[in-house]
Image (cartoon, rainbow, N blue to C red; front, side, top):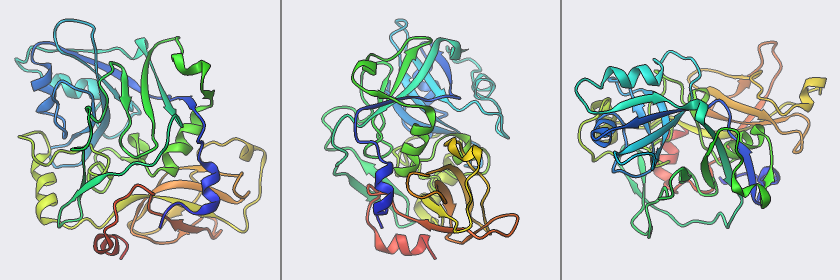
Amino acid sequence: MPIPGPLRTLLRTTPTLAPITNRAVLSVSGSDATEFLNGLLANSVQGKQSYGAFLHAQGRVLHDVFLYTSVASTAPTYLIEHDPTPSESPPLLGLLKRFVLRSKVRIRDVTEEWDVWGAWGEGPEAEQREWDWATSGAVEPVWRNSLDWPWGTAHGVILDRRAPGMGRRLLVRKGDRPQEVSTHDIVGTDAYLLHRIVHGVPEGSADIQPLHAFPIESNLDAMGGLDFRKGCYVGQELTVRTYHTGVIRKRILPVVLSSSTYHSSPTDSDTTMTRAPRLRGASTLLSSILAPSVNPGTAVGLALLRLEHLRMRNGQKWKVEHWWPDWWPDDPQMTKEWTT
């Protein structure tokens, strides 16, 4: 089921630029930087830019991250963009320093040097992908038809391949603006939140809850953030065992929330995140945002689903409907397993 027709009005198809707030940046440099990060990240680190995650030893997600390359020095240098929101997971800076031991690496917090921006709507969203399915229901994108590295090779610019249409991710010096400001519409942070919700892309601790979320249930496999064939890394054992012998029963999917008894209030004019409704049972509502342009009583969000209905704490009833993003690979057998 693709995105419902009325919700397509939420998609911005013109060139758009938005700041992405609440992001931190760490620098990892040194002759052993590539080997050091490859032993910790769940994706392969090959001296190139990528998207991936740091996992707990028991296979749960600690931090999902973007990995940028830098030309700051002659030694390999990476910039790690992540969500620094305090959570049950240890801060990433301390976590990395714990593993340094004798590795020739230097780790610094350079958040005060960089801003993060998202750019999208710069070209057609249509993209034909190949997929590699496992019997467990895990799925990986196959990049063999890409002429260049799928995540891009320009320093400080990542092609956001988590889903078609996500655009690009830009690291810009603090206080500067991207060069695209002259050709793109500049919108607020909420527009980026809406953009990734509509595309079915979870991000950060609000969606991929540290020490609770499993990487495959959080769609890291489909978004290109896991490598099931690389060598040892922290959290590999459970992740690979799930890939080969497990069954994936939950996924993070976009949902539309509606209430016939919804009444607007002064705060509703702000397209801020709303967490009023909650999911029952094994399902969890993650990021959500009001969508008054669709209907005054409508919000869209992401949810970790076994599909169940919503309820308000005061007994107000909400209706929740999920959809599979347009880009999601078609596998009827696995879809049936995830939604039963």
